[in-house]
Image (tube, rainbow, N blue to C red; front, side, top):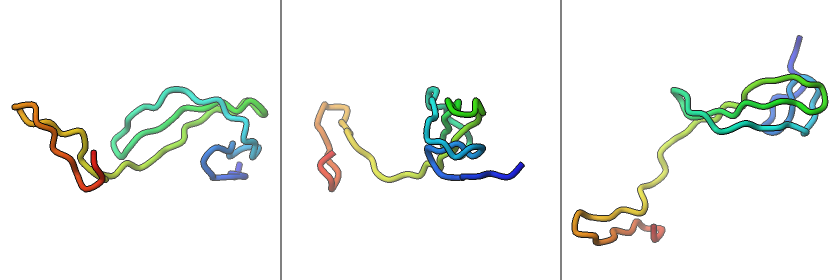
Length: 72
């Protein structure tokens, strides 16, 4: 069987956007969500890559806040 759709938020079997998602789960390259299609009852996982973008909410041992360039 061939994917009808390989886009975030759409069932690859029937193309419906009526997916019910589970909790986010980590994997070796990022994270994924398990989903169930409410239209055709297929199940699967949506995978996402994760990459570093910034440090934020940094506090020194003395309790001083250290902000990044974006103010976090």
